[in-house]
Image (cartoon, rainbow, N blue to C red; front, side):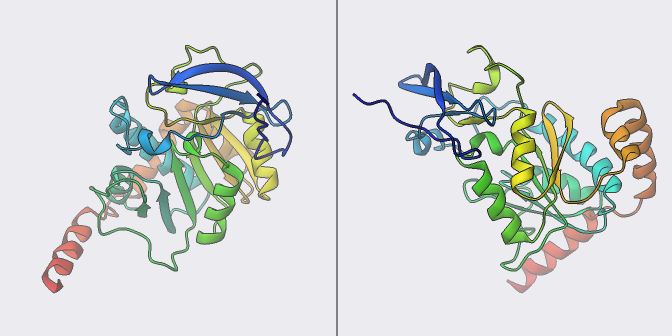
Length: 269
């Protein structure tokens, strides 16, 4: 039997098989690695329909904690990028929890997710001609088979080259099978990245790559000043700046205005 040839969606080069593991407790799946791009991915994920019977895995107990942390860090990042007065879209935003939190902080944020019910931000979904000043993609890229195609489509659809996202990265060697981020039991994580992989992605998209930490990243065509990058990496400076931003944004919360808007829409309907 001829072994399947898997090509890296970023470099276009053939990938080499590195290990096999059981997915969803029943499918034997081969994982492939690209020396050129540093990308690690599964074979063609034929099991995804089964894996996404529930859009958000039952094992994802950190969803609320992550949303709180992400909204606090976004508050700082958007200020540093000088786009805090713009429009924002959380792509594959799940239940809409992060969008609700961002709106509570006074940011004009929207959400979309074709696989998951929007519970917390139902009224705040993008129109067909929606354009964004920054896009969010938290816990998304590890679910994507072709990240270059996915990101390029996002940029073209929403007219924005600033993408703030999370995905846990590895460096140098393929992680051992006990790496929790593989998520073998859920079957939803199919692609894994190194920082150099994300840098190569940015290059293909005409952007620059900035790493906040091993799990939080920015692709953007905006030049981020060195002093702003210090805010991202130094948690003590970031905490002080966060307090400054919070005071600066007093009175900007959209919580009450959104309440009135939704009531009015319900009356009209």
